Image 1: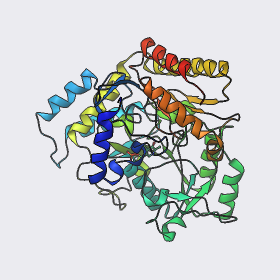
Image 2: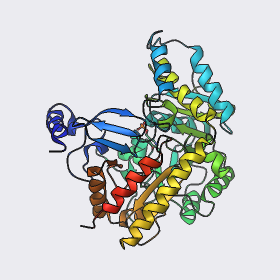
Image 3: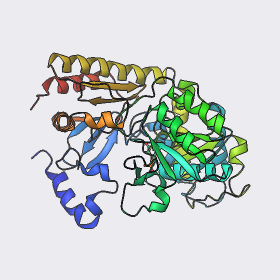
Image 4: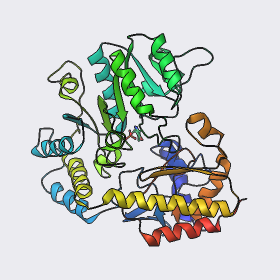
Length: 427
Ligand SMILES: *Cc1c(COP(=O)(O)O)cnc(C)c1O
């Protein structure tokens, strides 16, 4: 059996780890079947415990943007490890990466390192609340900002503009401070501001959403948010945990020419080690402890191995000529060719793409928000996922996730992928 070893490992894991995984999406609950246990990764490929290999379109959910286990990053981590794993003191390396990032990303002057995207977003809203002296935040349905309480909120019923807990354990008290709007719904944003005058500390948004599948901002939505924030003394937070260093080195701020007051990072910034960060102008960042009063801390924040992996990944991106052109062109080619094949098969679909992020919705309609993403045919996606998996193509195991195209994907991998899509049978 092709997935024999994975199957055994999953059974064993379930005895000791809740659901057998350390992060829910890995369990294949959405697509069904047994999750594939990986044992190694190199360049564009993953190898599982049964020695099957796959062209990887997840890339650890983004971090492996330059391909897996890149020799430059590997050497940098090895060399760093010889000098110690963690000191709990300041290091020169932390200044080096902070300087490198702030000098190469528009509109940020200081950056604070943390260990995950969740921490980054959680800390950014605390800072926004501390800075503005307000309690409410506005987020968009279908956007994910990590698993801290304030973000695990779903739309309230009827006329209620505040949210309801989206997970047991999140309190009503927390939920009442999170307002929800539909992605791309400018009217609704205006309405919410009108109903909560001078009460909203921040808008937080994925400037290109990747956690409801890939969904793009439309009709200058980001520019409009900038304006309404300016008019109301509200901070605009771009959650660039996915888009940072991916859409461009300067992320969505650079691509869309919209300045955020705070930006959160994760994924690519750590090059595969656990790193997150949040950044902003001196005026806002100076409010953080120890300089300011807003508390935030972390035992392993700025960890030398993690900083080295992040810095060497970012330096590779910066030094590689046409880095973004290449990954964007690969993605465009996949979009175009896969679309052509699905059209020939008469399968209704919509591919959303920005830079090296894309996803396929099996839907007759365009997808511009979470409701529309939900209306797509997800059982057909699940079928598509498994048929591609069996043919050596590793897609995200859910129709609500984005594919992340890496720099290691070349013509060979594209051809393998298209071959697998050609074999796809509508079952
Ligand atoms: C992944 C992600 C997060 C959470 O990051 P973790 O490192 O998983 O905690 C937050 N925001 C966005 C946009 C993400 O994609």
